[in-house]
Image 1: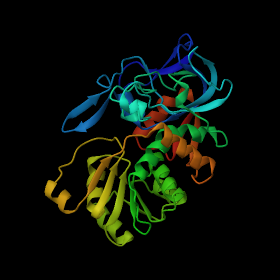
Image 2: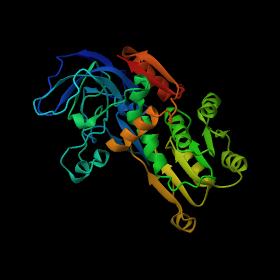
Image 3: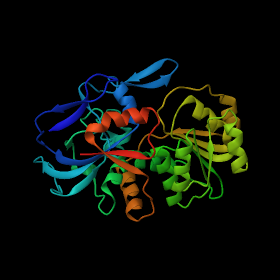
Length: 350
């Protein structure tokens, strides 16, 4: 099999060839067709996440060792299965839920693999989708995404799922109040699309790139503000008519979190999704007196991914811009993501 691997943290991926794995036990083997290239892989390739205050969470601390095959948005054809795998759709295409847990803890038994404390995720602790074959630990992690574009379907397992789970955390969402979407990249566009799919119209998107803001309007935002200026919070409040009910931060930097705090009304909600990194001082008294809810949102469950796919199949969730590139260009794509030069999403074609 062929793969593109991280051999040294922070360096371009290197092409590798090795024996195609044979599934054992409940494992299932896929011949991959697509794998989305996610911004999280920029940080994973660098070897760490920025925790702020000079602290880092290294990928070795997350159970990764080199060489490592990244890629956590895989889509392909089921070609083989281990002897203990039941009801395996050999010859059919499937989307993969990549956030696989240990399989035995209470969270995994509840179907909340993304909350497992000993996670074995595809593209992190397990080999991922920047390859032509992929081993999946159990067929329960397959989702039938038939009826929708498979390249777009691949992105649903991370950006679509993360966006959906974040939007759910805004509930109960007042229908006539504004939600501020911070960051109009692929993840932000997914949030806008999902909010519209759920019938919400009062959506304001912010970004520092006017091209991305134009794309956000096409995706369904009612208004946009370029957040590069020092008075971005006042601009947002002027456009939205005052402080807002909710903000979803798809960047996750100190500057964007500060912006979110500056635009929320009393009783407002901030959902943190992006992993750019950093930290901010938090006034405990102000947070209490403003009755703010600050919640991290990390991916989602298998059932939530099935719900996202159902929305897409019912044509309630609209596709975001997708560019297909050969798998051999995955390092270039990660470089462009790091530079903020990608509009929508890039999917590696295998």
